[in-house]
Image (cartoon, rainbow, N blue to C red):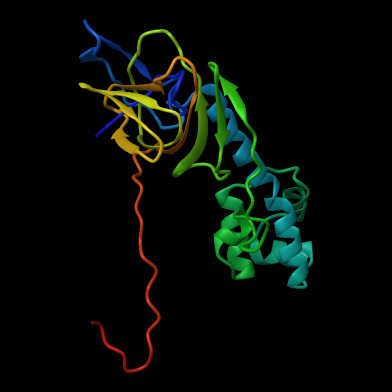
Length: 248
């Protein structure tokens, strides 16, 4: 089953979507273009990605300064080890210079740490996501992930809309899980209704739309969206093994 949503009901739709043209309830003629995953996102989601990137970059400077201090190095020491001027290093640490790979790679090598340690958040920290509900086209969208790129998770509350489904296509792959209410899903030639506890997944290149199936209530659901076509995979944790044990 592949299902879908238009920009009223799908957090992944927006600038890169194209309307489905055709007669009848389910349009069949589709015009699709190949664009970058970010250009296919709506403005509110693109702004969120930009905000997350800015937050990540803002944390690089303090992390550089802390790492250098912890290793007992002065700016002059680090400059000699990397070939980067003292003034550039100082501006990097204070946030006055935007970090680039050309600057971070030699710094990581000088400190003998992986590049991720300079850019990523510390491995130990508050894991809670700051929930920031957003209103878009009458629905409420709550982003549940903060890191840009990769799979993105959303909680969505979509009220009933009286207009006819308007299937769209865009880059990506999406998985939906209904929490409360009933979700109407239109995907290609399928038109189905899902209740609480039911799920659907689909390639978003297929014309799709989704929204509330009931006039008197909204539908609440979870959405996992892979902007570059990532699918949801699960993997079991390895079992503890004792010396001398063998597989069953």
